[in-house]
Image (cartoon, rainbow, N blue to C red):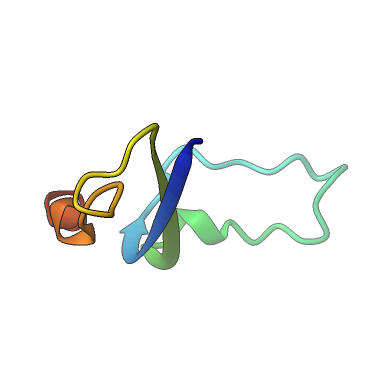
Length: 69
């Protein structure tokens, strides 16, 4: 039997794309939103699997704190 667990982490980040350009044929307007510093919210989901459990777990979620940091 294969055991699978997952853990999600939410994070915020900001960016700016200096080289952004729009093709007028495909865009509804000429607003270059990404040329201005702005933010997004993201989420990453990690899956871990194991063939055997250790102390009844694939791993302790606290072992993933390094990833969150």
